[in-house]
Amino acid sequence: MARIRNAVNDLADLTRPEVLDGWGAPTVSRLIEAHTQIRGLTGQLDGVRYTLLPRIEAEGSWRSGGAARTFTTWLRLQEGVSSRTAGKDMAMARRLATALPVTRERLVSGDLGVDHARVMADVAPTSETRTDALAWLIDTRTGETTTPERFVQTVPVDFPDPTEDPDGARTRDLITTVLEGAVADGTLVTGEGMVLREAPLLNADQFRKVATHFASVTDPDTDDLDDDKAAQGEFLDLSQTFGGYHLAGFLTDEHGLLVKTAITSLLGAPAAEDTRTTTQRRAQGLADLARVVLDTNQASPGAAIAPHLNVTVSWDELLTQITRTREGLCLTCGQATPGRGSTAGGSLAGTTTTGTTTDWDVAGWAAVGTPTMSVSGLLSSGGPVFTETGGRVPRALLHRLACDSAITRIVFGPDGAALDVGRAQRTVTGQMRRAVIARDKHCVYPGCDQPPSRCEVHHAVTHWADGGNTSIANSALLCWHHHALVDARGITMHWTGKPAQTTGAQVLVETGWAFTDARGHRIHLPDAIVTPPSADPTADPPAADPTEDPPAAEAA
Image (tube, rainbow, N blue to C red; front, side):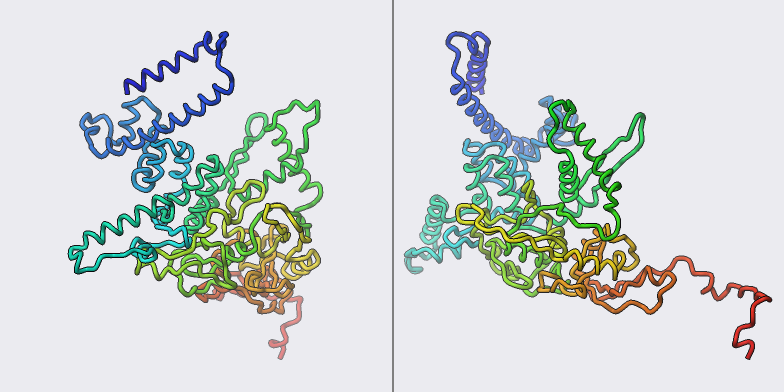
């Protein structure tokens, strides 16, 4: 440590003005090289710190002073750092120690940048399933997960005769040699090592996409839970204050992109004399957006549907995503999927089958301890993303977009060039949508009366992913909330016909559509809270009007 401190002091002396600005000042290229090396050395030192912290915590002598109840608090008091810094350091150190040994080793050796290591710690071990996936052994020759026993059986090795090796020592040494050689030449890697192979080729932001894709493929159910939490955390506060309104809130990726795209479409390029800041122009854009909607009556029933979200996804990936399961039930039909456990998985090979896909055999886990799956193309196949930002598209959103959206076919060549662009085909045409609106009039979910302007057209009887045709008979209006609910819960629909009544409240609540949940139970309207006076048996009969003729029954 003394030698390091002396070297740093020598380096600091070189930053004096007379050195940097004098006659012998270093060139910019030398400054760039020095800065890059300093960043790398700083990352190595951080790796050493992260290695030491768990050992200090486990030893326990930090409790003797009684000043701190937790190690994070002790670290904050000991080194004078903020609570946030101490917490981030400990979270990083613990994940490196328990789930990311290869990442920690490469960080300390200087082969991995500290930002890349933070990406691994932030994204990869975020669930028990993902932590297990980091330790999976992968045979890079076949792209499949394996075990040491299975891998050794695929390598030509002359094992000694059991009579010549009664205690098995030579056999164990030979197996160890084979495994060490496979690890050294990259034939056998862990899930963590497979992801880290991409780190030298990518910057930290690009590498985050790779690590995020690995996490999504190995445990998509956790992504679904995160999406649900984000949706539940949405809020928007618009409160009047002195001189105006205060705006605060949080939106999901989907809704945030919608709002951002809408505002940006109205901003345009600033004029030469426009001195407003970007945030000021954005505020004006939000007000203009509201004015356009109101002035053009865009909220009225039957309004045109313009594209608001752009999602990029391969055709195979689209079919795979929208037919995946949750808790063993198909998201499309709500029925149990054969060969599935309670954990929904992703196709690591990027290949699919028609209908309900089985991405890997979960039943085989208990026998071998590690699932067998293909990982070929895991890091290159990619998943569905928002076209503008590259962010992951939630499965529920992709499933819902498959019902009512415009799909454009784009064919890419080997070099990534677009070879052909097909005409955008809307799954529900404008005329067909108007017919569905004329029939349903509002959201058809029991008890919901949201207008068509807040609805989407859902493939009701047979989902589009299951080969359902696009027709009026197979289409129904569902508001945004109930569309997501029907897709996520595996709720099915069928047409029963509208009632004969044409007056009264029956027109509002009876739409002709029947809903059944994934367990086969019919979804009904909630019971009335207040009994109508005419149906109350204890109520007194209305007084007869002496001016009216008596009823026919009394006259008889």
